[in-house]
Image 1 (cartoon, rainbow, N blue to C red):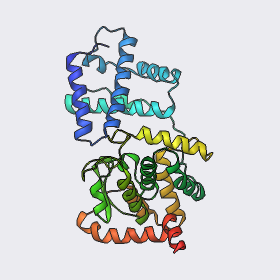
Image 2: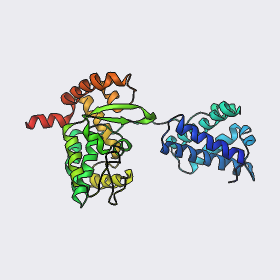
Image 3: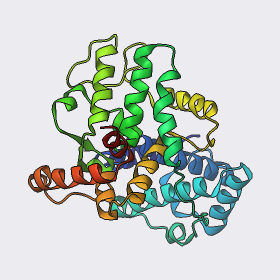
Length: 312
């Protein structure tokens, strides 16, 4: 596809805007760019253009938009993917309007595909505990087994996203709480579970590579930062070994974290705060008050703590 140099420059500016101003993750920016490129490719083919210019975007009409979405359905894209693609295109046009005074009201008039309401799928406590017990037996190397178990406990014991867990550093072990930078660079404070902190320490003692305080804690076989896909492959082996649903992913354990806390009496506001779905009001306040309160929520409600207390 041949793009006009002006359009190429604007796309680069837009992606930089998403990353640096909107604080979108690299993965999200990449997805938005892929969606936009697919849309622009369609315009070139649909209109039989030799070069796509910014002026062509002004003339996009409802027929073209419907044809584009129809093509995506024919290519087996699901409603969720099509909705996101439309959102990406709208975002780009919104940027064009705000920063380049380009208007096309047709884009905002196109209805988003209807999405089926899907509730997060969580395992029951028995299956989740089975995962925490068996995960370290998946890999042949003892240190990798220890790594996977520590990582799983960060997901289920602390409610982290996989990207957040893989960003934890060795220096975090020196604090009583994890300071996590989540989506949109929002900061939240999460008390360490004793069992999670111990498992992470056990992994650090076994890993055959030198870990600095500020480098990623979890590494792969070659000593570089562990990639989510590697851990994902180990989870596939785990779910097959335990005959668990194919929907099980790293994110499943974050859902388990929230569901099990709620089922064991934790209030919804505390869970939202632990998950990072709402920003915390003041660093100075939450480092003391919220830390003590959220620790009490863990001690009263998390199955891992309750199980540990029952053994003592």
